[in-house]
Length: 508
Image (cartoon, rainbow, N blue to C red; front, side, top):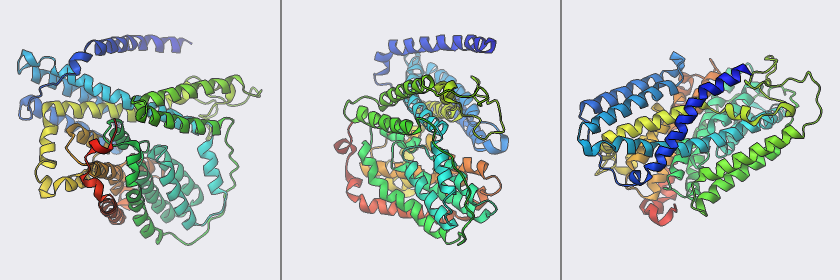
C-alpha cells in the first residue's frame, strides 16, 4: 500500500503536466492548423549537430544486443536534444519563426498519440489472449500431433503468415518459434531454418494488412491507402515468403520427431476475447471508412469493452482454493518455477496488469523515432532526402520504383519505422501502386537480415546460439530472391495501379 501511494505521488506531477499539455494543444489548434514556413537549416551548426546526435543515438540502437541497452533510451534523449536545437535554430532566424518549433512538435505528437493508443489497445488484446491461454493451446495442439519436421516447417510458416496480419509479427514469431523448439529439440538445423522461415513469413504476412506491422498501420492511418487496397499486395506477400520457403524446405531433414504430450486448454473467456478482438478491428475499420473518424477511436472503444469483460470474469469467477497461484499488483507471481506464473486466476484478474505488459520499450522507441525524424524534417533534412530519392530520376537514376526498392533494403539495416515515417513525412507525389510498393518493401525488407525486424531480433534471443545472425545471412540469397520476385509480381499484377493517383482510389 505504501509502495502504491508513493508511486501515485511520483506520477502526480506527470499527470498534471499531461493535463496542461492537452490544454496547451487545444489552445494552439488554430495556429497549428495553418501553413508553417520551414527553412533549410541542414547546413547550419544546429542542423549538423542534430544530425550527429541522431546518428549517435541510432548507433546505440543498432548495438542494443551487444550493449544490453534498451533501444528506447538513446532515442528519447536524442529527441529532446534535437528539438532544443530546432527551437534555437528557428529562434535565431528571427522573431517571426519563434513558434515554428512549437507548432511542428505538436504536429509530431499528434501523429504519435494516435499510433500509440492504437498499438496500446492492440497489444493489450494480444496479451489478454495470451493470458487466457489461447496461444499456448494452439502450441500444445501442434506439438502433440506428431507431425514430421517438414510438416511442422510448413505448418508454422503458414500459421505465421496467417496470424501476423491480425496479431503483430513479433508475437506471431515468438509463438511459432516456441512450437519448432518444442518439437525439434536436439535438431539444430531444423530449428534454425524454421526460425528463418517464421521470420520471413511473419514479416510477409504483416505487409498486406494495416494491423500486421507498424509501417502499414502508419500508411493506413495517414489516409494514403484505403483499407481494402492493401490486399492488392497479398499475392506479392505470398510470393515473398513462398520462394525462400520452398528453397529452405529442401534442407529440412525428412524425419518425424516424437510427439510431445501437451493438454493445455484455453481458459474461461479466451474465445470471447478473440471474438472481441476481431470485433474491435471491425470497429476500427468502420470508424475510418464509414464515419470518417480516426481508427484509434474504434480500438480504444474496443479496449473499453475488453475491460468490462475482464470485470465480468473477475466478478463471476468460480470458487478456487486459497493456494492457487496468483499474480500480485506488481505483476510478480508467487511461484516463479511455473512457466505460466505471470497469469492470474479469475479471482484476482486485473486487466491493468495485462495492459502493463505492453511492449513499452517499443512504444517509447516509437515516440523517440517520430520526434527525432520530425525534428530533422523541420530542419530540412527530409526535403533534402526526398529530392535525392524521388524527384527527377531519383536515386542513381532508378526513378521512384528504385527509390521504393531501396527503402526495403534500408529496412534490413535500419528499423523500418523511422524509414517509413521519413517517407510519409516527405510525402512524395506517387501513384497508388508506388505507395503499395513502398509499403510492401518496408514490410518485407527487414527479412533480409536477422536484425532487420523485431521478429528476427526476438528469435535470436529465444533460440540463442541456434538461430544467429550468420545462420540467417547464409540464407539471405534465397530471401533476396523472394524479395525480388515479390516486387516483380507486384509490378506485373498491379500494373494499372502504378499510374493511378491516390486521390481517385483512397478515401480519407
